[in-house]
Image (cartoon, rainbow, N blue to C red; front, side, top):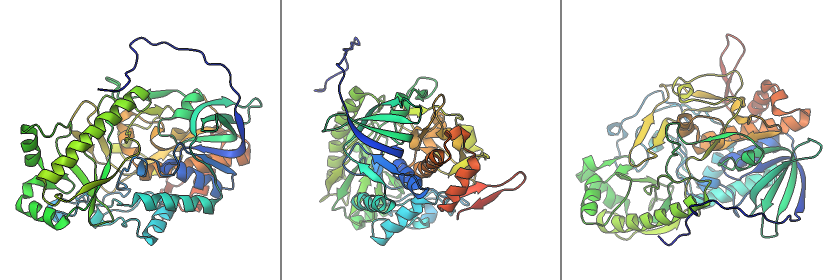
Length: 486
């Protein structure tokens, strides 16, 4: 494998001190422009804060646009589980097993979806889509940019966060970014880490966990890609003739076995998984898999990208040569960055557990909800574990999961919030990441306004502002349960 491998013996060198350009100061600095960071910036700005968002790439969207993670997974609870046979259209290429339910995430997420739907950039969540949201990633980028413009958030692109230092007067943090202009620092009263990997929180000294308790392994990475000039009618005919070979969005088991027997396909996955998009002649393919790699290691990321792109070539050839409907298809786009499901989980004042999720637990300091199943892709190889939230229910995410232990004036949002390996497999999906992002942004802005750290801020102030912004929260007093913000 022609990649630079990690040296077997660790060796470090000391670099000389260097000057950095001061990029200014703001109330709230959001690091990371993915779904969580975008929502955090909007939430903080709407609360009245002066906000800067710094993003390592030249566009917004994170996993939705950088890694092409499509579609947005369901953010609805489930009053009735659907079945494959009930769906009617066996070739619709969207999940068939999520039945009727109600949205448990609102706020910034719905503002984004309204904008996307107005441009034809996504399909509305419905029983027909399995309550997922297929979207166009290029329109996704554009709508995020326009919403940032409208919110008044200042943006810095091509800026990779590499460190953080407490300000001398204790009033916040100085975050260091690597840029083409050399190092740039930005000072902020409160920082929201929406990097996905907890990069800034770690630099600030926050403790974290990686992987599952028994062996430290994380869920595998996947490089997603879009395939164009797909003939849906021809594929639908194949599915009708081979009903045992396709289940909503995955299958082709016999064709895979034939290809494997002929030495044409060598993949860790046991099936092919792809989803429809808003474009009828296009699918998003989610079938590469790289295990035993960590998103915080440059050596592992290099190996993962190399391996996944080789797998992509195999899958592309397999689809074109063996699967009806793909004869004239081609790969029109692959992710700029491989999709990372799991890396650091920053330890907060509370750690959400798998039991909390599967018991649909409630918390007084709730700031976000989730209803997505526990969804663990096997860290060792093939197979996926799926466990559903109780029917008709959803779980709470408390504010304490967003507050890293041992730090002040720092919040986390998205998939790096405080939770166990099992809990993470549910809250990592993008709609829930947006809910925790909006909550972190609101809390950060209120922290600056009231002049106290997040721990000294009454959680009811955060809940009240989230409700004002249209978020959905189950809040109430003792003996009273209410859902507001619908």
